[in-house]
Image (cartoon, rainbow over all chains, first blue to last red):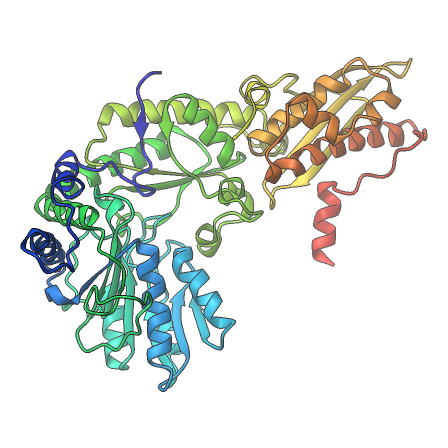
Length: 396
Length: 145
């Protein structure tokens, strides 16, 4: 197998050639520092502002409310740490979910060690946050609700509008980590009552090393990086102009192609889901059947372990990922899969396949065929499957 | 991440399968941690391991260490098999990533568990063999106390 089939677009995406082309001049001929006063550098300031404008337009936000960061992770850290510091007089309580990205969870754990109180809300078996629990968790000291727009592992899209309404009604800030959703779903920060939103360039066919935080006007948020007047004194450091230009371009294209991509990817996603569930036994779909990202599929195959599956898929030229412990670098499988109630051994056997607009039906057919063969091979050497069959169960 | 030898034993594992009426069967590890190894031994009257098979639920390193462990005990005496350490398994595989060393410990333990089963069935004592700790059944009992 010579060809590479890349089905790990939730990990990162291919940078669009148009994006690279837009970036290139800013490395060589247009290398000026946007903070410099001469004419030569003014084009760089203009380019940064244009990119900011494209992003604001995509979110129906004010241009001056977009702040560039080096990553989605930085944006998440800034939103949470900055809010906790700025609103300390009001309280120290944060509400978030059990299935957030580690950029949120580890930040919250860090803040807990420094006096913050955090409530981690449960999700149901499809990964949707429990809104009644969220409402009950609100205290007079609650300053921030942070719930991701869509989950990176199982793709479940959260009831963001409802959460925004709850936050607004209770005068609590609402932050959403939209790293997976931005570029895949239509987002209007005003309609959804979002006060802060994090996103990343490389998840939407933009460059790596660039992200942004949307901060609603009037919101007090402490600076996270000090040392310069960039980003209206809120995020110091010379702007990564080529990456910012690339992000702006990627966002513009994502907005233009959103509907077309959604339709195509949802059709292909559902084709993949139905095919796997039909052709392979003892498998479950993780996440919600319809409230999920257009490009996300996540399965658990009983009696097998995810890393073995990934290595064998890699040998066939297929790039995928898993929530097994071995791939997470810890002894526990993914916190997301455990939060939706999967037993450890089922969580270990998970496989995430995330599509792109370039994914074809032929690729899906090939991948399902390979997964089917590999799962059968791994089961034939699994003591768990042996016990299952010996206990009077047979492959259907 | 893995050595060529590990990849070889993972992609073409030796001695996969079961032995009916085996002289000894040992299962170690637990599904919670994501690794379970089961080793079957056929031991003849002279105390030589005639045949060995394994089944493993686990990562690439777990499969490769099981495969290598079965290769190392095949044709050996009980005492020789008992002396095969996790270090020997790792060396035979040209090393393992640090996070995967526990897989080689499981392989050593699986051999011991199978020998323990053989000794129990035949009511004999194998010099130097202690009751294996990480049998699944026991692990579950421990969790429930």
